[in-house]
Length: 195
Image (cartoon, rainbow, N blue to C red):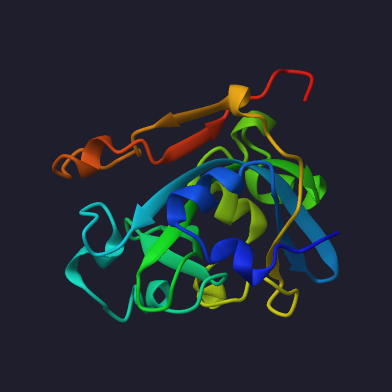
């Protein structure tokens, strides 16, 4: 178990978004590990990115994005869902990677308590689904992802070769103008069945 160091996150956001594929997202709850391999991410970069929460500047909601790299930015959306992001880059430059999907691999019995009414392939295949599965909410906003103190971190995993990675426009931003709407800043691992 090797946690990703802070300097992993202290890079340009699209690089971090791609490099997070194959890493292991871990939630520690009551002495139990819930974890999954990250298979889908999206990059959001600065106030100039009109799809980014920082497009209108710093607010109480997005303040964590302006802080140090390697912290969790957890926000509530649509009045019902939590979403998890990893803050990247320099302090005062708001950038973060949305963790969109994981393949769950540890703590499956506990995850099934919240997601078991769905097929396992749908337990964590969306940003709100994975936060529900791992019990991630606003209490973890600002948590360090570089140590185990807050019960949420990201570990080294398997490198995913470029042949299995697809870059596409981000999801759910239809009202955002170009060029931001079409930026290929969603990274998706399309792994072969045996992996």
